[in-house]
Every structure is written in structure tokens, then in C-alpha cells.
Amino acid sequence: MSVKTEHLTYYQGTLAGRRALRRRRRRDMLTALLFLLPALAFLTAFVYVPSVMAFTLAFWHYHLLGVNTTWAGWSNFSDALQFNVFQQSLANTAFYAAMMVPGIVALSIAIALLINRVSRFYSFIRTLVLLPYATPAIGTAIGWLWIFDPTYGLANGLLHTLGLPASQWLQSPTMAMPAVAIYSLWHGVGFDVVIVMSALAGVPRGVLEAAAVDGAGAMRRFFRVTLPLISPTVFFIVVVTTIGALQSFAQVYALSGGTGGPEYATTTTLFLIYETAFVYNHYSYASAMAVILVLIILALTLFQRWMGKRMVFYQ
Image (cartoon, rainbow, N blue to C red; front, side):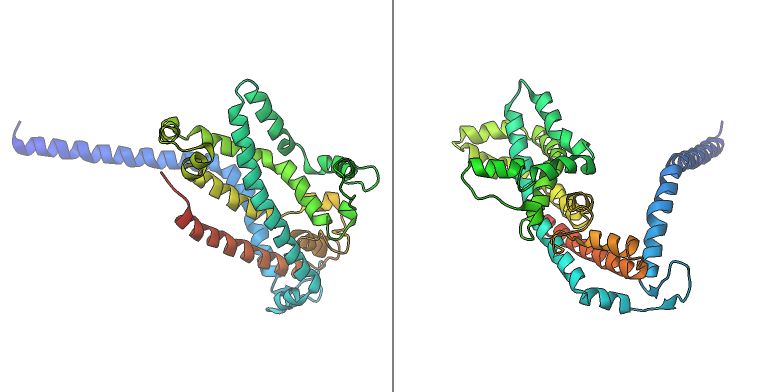
């Protein structure tokens, strides 16, 4: 066989291999799309299309029956920003997030560290911590309504045992939102504990042992070694908890009896959006509030990402 014939055979074999590779890639792509199609259809029907509709409605004076629907421009946004209840809902949401984010981070790290020290009942304690997160918020809130009862509740009984004055809790404008935050911490911390425990399992023991040999105490090892190594996980918890706190609804609805009271003290922004749309049927007004809330969440997430690049230690 001549050199020219060998080159031609090699070229044809390479060309056939490339064609086969392209066919295989197209087949894999079609298979992947086939498996993703149910999820894409669900997201399109229940996330993307409603989001586009809500954004569009924010610029119209929309009526449920389609009668006298007129262009509103930016008036829904300006009216929402000047609405005193909406302003209070933003303040309530910020107050709730300010309690939730540090509380979740501190509690999840502390509980995870304590569980890691217990080897005998490790699986049982981990399940016990995660159990509140697995229970429905509406169902567990019924029990917490009794706990926060100002007359017969367990919370005031504990305060009385400690020699502290009783509180009205959910019936007090000043204590209602902290009471909701206490319940939310109890209900949601288990998920974050499991995440932190997974991060702690990935910390090299050799690094901790080397720090101990160098004379570093427990607190110094935690702040100088453990915390920097799990900082990506902590950053993830901060971002997710912030987004969740700004979208709080179920716990507010359950603990306030669907009123957001007393005196709008527990009316978060998402609760007000729900009330405006589905109680008072002001869909355009509610859509404008929702767009404002989305922009606030997006801005905070971008700011946290900017901060994370400067504060988070990636191995």
C-alpha cells in the first residue's frame, strides 16, 4: 500500500469517527432533553410564565374580568413605595431577616460542633435536629400558638421560672415578630445543621492536629482553621437564609392567624403581596410590590456575592 493510500484511509477513518462522535453527541443531547422535558415544562408553567405575567401586570391597571384594563406605567410602583403599610412591611421583613440570618448561622454552627463531639448517638441526634424542618410549618405552628399563649403558654412559664416578667408574645406589637423569628429558627435550623456537619466532615484532621501541636486552643483552632475552611458553606447558608427570610410567608400566616397583626407588626412584604392580590384582588398593585421585592432580593444577593469573593476562603 502506498503512502498516499495510507493517508487516504486514515483520513476516511478519522472522518467516519468524527461523524460517529457527532451522531453520539446529538443522541446524548436528545436523551438529556427528553429527561429534562418534564422539569422544563413544570418550570415554564409554574415559574417562568407566571413571572412574566406578574412583571407585565405591574405596568397595567388590571381587573380580574378584563374590564377597563388600562396602561399604568410606573404609577403602581410609585403608589406602592408611598404606601405606608408597604413601607412597614419592608421594615418588618428587614427586621425579621436581621434576626434570622445571624441566628441561623450561629445556631447551625454551634449545634453541628456539639453533635460532632457526640459519637455514640450521632445518627439519632442528627435525625432529631432535622425533624422540625421535615414537619409542615402550618402543623407545627399550631403547637407554637399554645407555647406563646400569654396565659397558659410554655414560654411564659419558662420566663416565670427564670424570674422574668411575662410577655404577650404574638399579641404584642413589639414581641410578635421576635416570636415568629424564634419559631422560624426552631423550624429551619435543622437543614443548615446538616449542611454544616457535611462541611465539618471535610475539614482535614491533620490541619487541626497540627494547629493543636503548635499550641492553638479550641477557640483559636475554630476561628483560625475550622471557620475559614467551612466559610464557603457558611456563605451559602447566609445567602439562602437571606432569600428565605425576605420571602417569609407561611410562618407569618400561621402564627398571626392570617392577619399579619397585631397592628401590622408581623406583616412581611410577601404576606402583604398575598393579601393585596388574593384578598383585595388588586393584582397589578400586588405585582408591582412583587417586582420591587425581587429587585431588593437581587440587589442583596449581588452584594453578598461581591462580599463573598473578598471574605470566603476557597481551598
